[in-house]
Length: 215
Image (cartoon, rainbow, N blue to C red; front, side):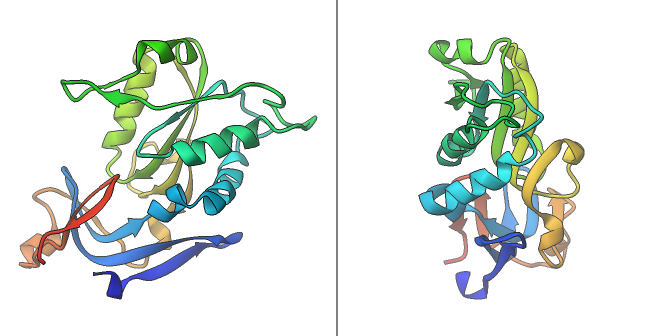
């Protein structure tokens, strides 16, 4: 599939780029005609630092952040983002402060929870939620519900990618959106135009990456 991929770059920082793979993809609740591979942004430490600098911009001078909650393997970027938000500077809101970086876990019932040792960094704290991709909004809502359950105060939401159909898109600061991908379509399960046209699924996609189905 990757032989069909094309690259898109962030206009103001071309070092930050991702591959887009056209095809027919499914998550556990939606289908799409493109897969955006953000794994390099999460794993390449040099690029992750640039990503963190861009994600920090909306918050540097205006938003108090005590804790960054990372979802979908965003811990590397989260650590750099904490450094950016706590850098020295008279106009930096969190200058010199300690910012914690934590991740929720799935319990035996599949619900997101925080370990007891991390609750003190959530309850009553100003939380920046960091997530890789927001397509249907389901994972994002789970993260918000988890933060609310533990008494955290949501100070902001940042993502590497945001689909324009998400209801809370005006509250999210993304690097890329579906408008950056020509012809991008997202379908609810059962309403997929590709399925109706008899196009076979190419891969199952998740926050971990993709798994081909038609090898």
